[in-house]
Each structure stands twice: as structure tokens, then as C-alpha cells.
Length: 415
Image (cartoon, rainbow, N blue to C red; front, top):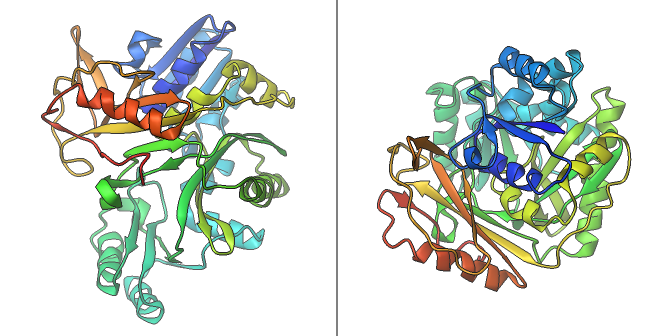
């Protein structure tokens, strides 16, 4: 098969690495890809939002299957365009992707279909939003309604911070159109975890659980990011909790989307929190998570191509998982998620045990790999236990020395 992966980050590199293991693959293309992907696939200089260019390329190269990584093209209707052109694509339509594209839609959907989540209210008027915060108090959560690259969520510990967040979104327009509507939610206490599943219409096949860390600094401090590291599976999620999350959240969501005439094909990601009342939904994504994918896919025993073909054909892929743990730590540009420099030479690391490196924001300048984004690399490792996997990751990171121009958290897999 000829396969096209759309995207340019660590998630897409992880997908390409897994696809490359398959004997069913002839050629893997990535659009636009990155410096690391370029070493394992043919990178094409087509932007992920260039719908016409991507469809034309897929036709010309007789692409048998396209996998869409990022959320923005999904919400702009890339799947619809590919389907109209008669091209096979593993990704949701824009109607189904609205589950991630609009927080207010997702909350209304969950309320309507009795899917467990936090209580909430939606606002476009700053004064009304502030009045609601005054009534509810803090801690409280303020979310930009639209896509904000994982940064449009503010967990406000005080009323003052909550009111400031409202101003940032509705008055200062820091998140542009994404923040023109905001959702204010009750704060839920508990440990977070992620559960992704391969989905086609009513068929739902869950993966292993993962836990990612969004805050920029150790001890979950600092600003929210797209994710600074993750590990899988999550040992404190019991089989009972997993069964509940699969049936009452993922399966119910897939069934309800079918009932609403927006059937889902692709990866359904539930960002969950373990409350005293059991798992509840914090957010849905409608694609592979980043960085969760980088620690979940290495544990998948199956041929990923066969899994996708089976799921799309309505067959059970009979997922099998390694009895191991996987940890991944993001190496980010110093200053991320704020402003940062690009074009910095990548740190040189030695492998430690089973460690591996996945590229996010990188590019080739001549024969040299340099940084080209906020989240630059993910250093991962698999091992028998979480502790051993984590030790291997930090062993590899330590081998690089000072890492001028880059930052990483030192507590992933330990908190």
C-alpha cells in the first residue's frame, strides 16, 4: 500500500515509525513532515491545510490510505474532501470532528446523551461570564471554545485569575476566533488520564491508557502546553474504571454520533479525570493525542496498517499489547509555550537501554538537523516496569549534557 500521513509533529513521526514496521507498506509519504520523518518517509512540501494540493497528490500517487494527524485540517473538512474524491481516509468528517472543534458543542452533546462530565455554562459576553464566576467561586476552569493548540484552557485557582482569563479571551482576544465563545466549567479534582480508541461507526476498540503532563515545569507548575511528556499504561486506572470509560464514554459517544447522523471513523480520544464518582470527560479529541501517541503506539503488537484496514472494513482488529511500560519526555525550545528561537542544533544523545527519539519541531538545513518549533523532540523508552522505562529516558537525556536552548521536565513518569 501507498500511505500518506498528514502532519508535521511528533505524533506523525510516531505514526510513520509504526507504519514502517508493516510488510503491507510500499511507500510512506508525509505532508509536510519534519526532519526526523524525512529519514523514514518521503516528505512532500504540501501544507496540512492545503486541501486541493493534498487531494491532487493522493490521486497522482495512487495513495491507498491517508491518515490525518492534526486537528485543524479535520475541522476544515479534509476528510470530506478526500471522501468526495473517492479516496480512503482514516479520520472523522468535519461534522464528527466538531466534538473537538467546539467545546460548547461537545458539552451540549455530553449533556444531551448523559455522558459524565463537569457542569458548565457558555458565554460570549465578558460581564455575564464574570458574574457567573462571582457566583460559582474558584477553583474554576475557563476554556476557549475553538481550537487553540492545547493552550486554550486555564485552570484558575483564584477568582482573580478566572476573571483575568475571561478578559484575555473575550476582551483582549488573545485566542482570536477560538476564544470568541468561552466555556466555564466546574473544577474537577482527581488524577487525569487519556483513553484513545480506534473507531468506525458503532465499533470501538480501546487502546491502553496514558497520562500526559500539560504544564511546562516540574511538579505540574507553569503555563499549559501541548504536552511535556507522557507514559503508558496508567497503573492506577483499574479494569473496572477502564470498562466504565469504554462503555459509558467512548461507546456511548460513538453510538450517539451515529444517532445524530454524524458517524465517526478515526481515533476518538477521551481526556478523562478520575473523580470520586468515577471517570468523567474533561475534553474530547478526534485524532491521535500528542504526546500520548508516542508512548502508546510503541506498545501495540499488531501491524498498524492491518488494524486500520480491519477497523474500516468493520472487522475486529484483535488488538494486542506488550506487557511493558513506555515513558516519553518532551525536549522543548527554551521559552515554550511563549516565544522561543528556532534553528538551534539538536542535542546529541546516546541511547540508554531501549530509548528512542521522535522528532516534533525539527527540520533539515543541508545535512544538519535543527529545531523548528516549540516541542522539538520526544525521548522515549520501553521496559518491563514504568520505573525502568523512565530511568532509560532520563539516562539518554543526561548523556546530552547542558542542552543550551532547550528545556525538559525531570519528573515525567514519577508524578
